[in-house]
Length: 122
Image 1 (spheres, one colour):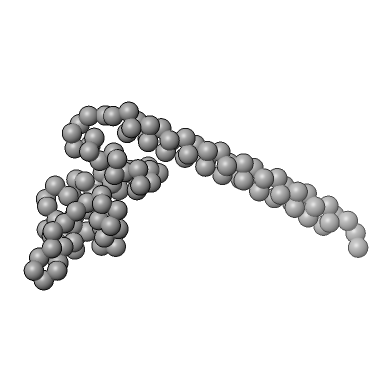
Image 2: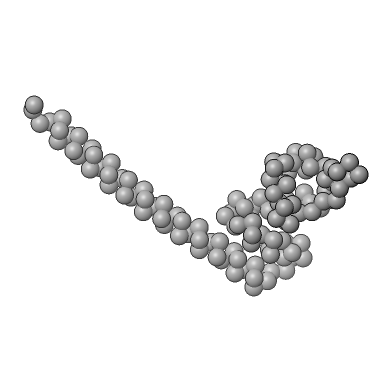
């Protein structure tokens, strides 16, 4: 299947597919005309790549996980990479929540100041 067909089948952009290939997450062969042709088993592989990316796993770690997906075996490396991605995401969430709390405090301060200014006669 050509890259456009793979993009249509998986919902991934052609640019993303080229990136996945550049990162050696998927592979293709080239026709005499230079067009990429992908094997049928690339479709579920792209689906898994997208799932892992959506879950916050960096593409540099996905390559180490993909063999486990195809063999059905879990390795300590895969578990470690997933745990690291989870910890990183949890830290980012905590950071974002702290930022939100600071913004809420600023909003409350501005609101209180605006109410005080509005009720003070000129």
